[in-house]
Length: 423
Length: 179
Ligand code: FES
Image (cartoon, rainbow over all chains, first blue to last red; front, side, top):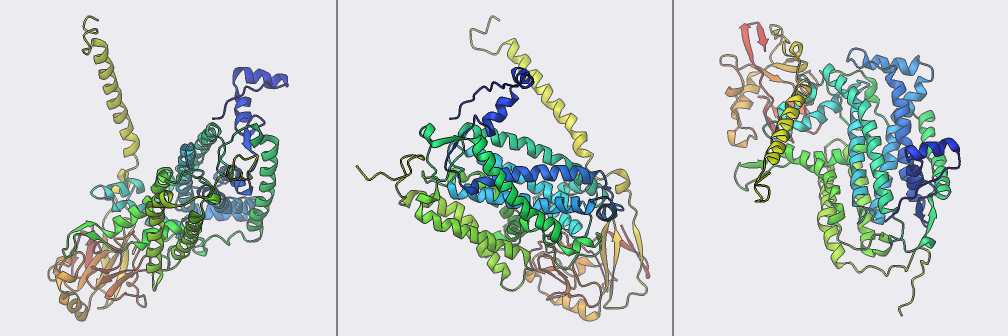
């Protein structure tokens, strides 16, 4: 376990602060020169800091947009258009915010798959993992509500479909939906509260990020070999080694991000959201933003009830089942540290899990594709198979594999990654 | 403090429990206004009913009207469509309702339903001419592929229920009042 080191700043002013509030120690111990970090972190370890960067960009651009935005169904759409056309640099800031959401999700999803590959969720890092999932849920809620704010057709109908999910809850479902709407449909009260929460949640998220980093400090960073740190020879200080490496990642990531922002700001959006919301007509097909597609595919893949066979008794109707599957697919991840029974963390030493990991990646890509298609032809079947595999991966494959897989021998230490010949 | 040694509850325990209970009740009571403010406000609840002139809706045609922020379909059904709806064996239905249950007596040619898919709330297609009406000649919801028949009953797809029939009445032969 990591120990905390008190920092003694040379600078008089900093020393004065440090004596009264050890905030410099805090930074130093989590991402500074007093943070011993495994020496073998590869570039997949860059995405945590990139996600943090995107959070900052989202907050800064968002605060600015809120200065020009009007949260009212009669004004919202035009206020966004005005921001883009008339406000100085509005087009840029708006594109940074809209694409920023996508790139935030890109960073976070890669960060999560990194965790899945290298077993970053295993003891003693369960809480780091779970806090990360809380961050992802907060992001999803924030992104969803943010997408409603421009009040285009996709905003309105996305909000309608997603809030209606709650009507699947038995008995109280409809009251909950009315409560969420503040009316009988998605309307002005809904828009107002979404704006309020869209502004609030990122700050809550930032708070959870601090807990996430704190838990990381306590359990130390994982590493690509997945073995514990044995001695000082295995570690290097976070600063300057990883601050520099993260800085390089930031430069590359920002380059790609700014390509989207400046050259193709609408490439990741849906053209229908440039049509003002119309409660009287549903667009041809309602497609969520790309980062929700796999979960949307899971939601739609369930079209059958669970009941007592050969009777009409329905125990769980299809609609509720679809909603449960969608939320379940994420809740499931909270139990991952216990579902995966393998003692070995890194996939490097798990030759069979290696394949299942890549099948899961392929499955998520497949579900993303299905989520973007109309539910016709073979797509519903493909979606159902993809959904079934997703759950099977976590509920069947992982628990069993940990018991039967023959893992490869682990290296002696990070500093000495050569496997000693058996003595 | 005499019975503390005997392991029984003492005065202080009682005060702790009583204080915590009062605090808990107080917190719940204090939270309620902050939850209930999310429910529809009085002006939202006061939204009036709407009257629809149906005199120029020819058989086979339908209109959409807005009521409480949601679309309502008013459809003038043809004889064939009524026949088609009545011919379905009730056992074949997901949400078992006869056609007669869904219209008003003496007005079987008029079907009035909420234009809100019971799955996740999209507006089904099929009201305006030229729109796809699905496999059963009623409505088709493009969002996740629910098919409704000419009585607005769910026949295929993920929606669990028939299209809801709102409260309405015939003011006279040419006017329907919804709400
Ligand atoms: S909302 Fe109509 S099928 Fe889902």
